[in-house]
Image 1 (tube, rainbow, N blue to C red):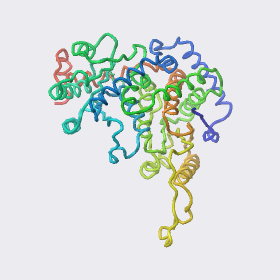
Image 2: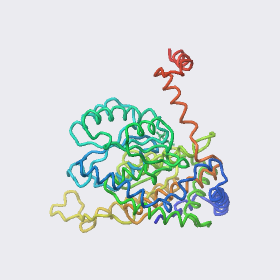
Image 3: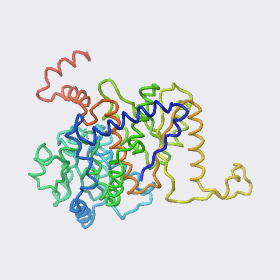
Image 4: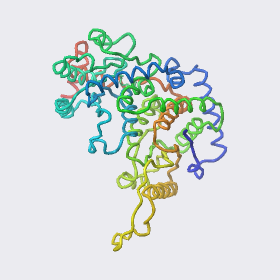
Length: 444
Ligand code: PA5
C-alpha cells in the first residue's frame, strides 16, 4: 500500500495555495473518473488490475513451464519505451542483486533488446545467444517500431536457424488485429498476447507487456495485481487526502507557483534504479507537451549524492524531489566491532546497514529542504511484488490526475514522431525521399 507525505513542502507552500491546488486536482480527478477528458479512449489501464482474468496469468505460466521443459535459460525480451521499461523495472526490483554472479538457475535469465540501435550491444547479444538455450518475447503494440523490429529480425533469424522448434520459442505481444508483428505471428504460428487497444505503452506494465516477462523471470504477478487492485480501490475515492490527488496538487503547485520545473525521483536502493526510468517515461511522455510539463529526472542514492548531490544542494533552485521511501529492508546485515577501529566506525557497531541508510536519507532530506528543495515522500513497506503493483498503479493514476490538472492530454505522444520521420528519411525509407533530400541539404 502506498502512502504519501508532503510535510517536506510545508516551509515552501502556503496552506491557502495548497487548498486551491487540491481543488484543481479534485476537478482533474473528476475528469479522469468521469472518463470525459482528452484521450479518454486510452483509459483501459484504469480497471486492468481488478479485471485481469486468471486465464491470462495461467497462459503466461504455461509459456514459463513449457520453456522450462525445453531448458530455456535465457529469455530475450525485445521492446522499447512502454514496451520494456515496466518489465525491466519489476525484474530489477525483485531480483537478487548478484543473481548472475551467483549463477542462480531456478529461472531463466531475462535480458532486454530492441531498446537501442547500438551495433555493439546487438553483436554482443548475439555472442550471448550462441552460448545459451534461448526463448524470445517480442513486444510491440504497433508492431512497426524500428528498434525492436531490427532486433527481432536478427534474433528470429538466429532462433530459426538454431532450433527445430523455433516457432515455440517465440512469443509475440502486440495488437489484437493489425501490424506487421501480428501478421508475422499468424504466419509463423507464434503464441500471441494482446496489448489492449485502449492502453498506451507507458500504461501497459500490468498487461501481458509486463506480465509475461515478469512471470518468465519467476515472480508472482498475482501478488503484483493484488497490490494494484488495492490501489485501484483506494484511489477511486474522491477525497482531498487521496494520495494521487495530494501528489498531483503538490507537484502542480510547485511547478506553477514556485517555478520548480524539475522533479527528481529519488531512490535509495539500487534495485529501484529502473523505477526511476519507468516513471520518467510515464510522466515525461504524458505531461511534456504544448510547451508545458515538469521535467522528470531521477537519482539513485546514496551513490548519486556523490555526483548530483552538489547540484541538488546548491545549484539553480528549479527542482523538487519525490523520494521513494522503503520502510523495511528484506535483509539484515549488522556492522561488527573492530579492535583497532582505524576507520573509527565502532560507534556504529551493532547497527545494521539499513539504519545508516535511513540516517543518510533523513539527513539528506533536511539538508535539501534547507537548501531550497521541497520534498515529497512516497512510501511502501518493503520491496515485493505486492508493493510494486501498488506503486505502478499509484503513479499511473496520479499521472492522469496530474496531467489533467496541468491541462494536457496525458495519453498522446505526438512529439515522438519527429525523430522517427527524420530517421526514416535519412535511412532512405521509400516514401520519405523529399524529406531526406531536405535534411541532407541542411546537414551539408
Ligand atoms: O508509451 C508509448 O506509447 C511508447 O513508449 C511506446 O511504448 C514505444 O514507442 C514502443 O511502441 P510499440 O510498442 O508500438 O513498439
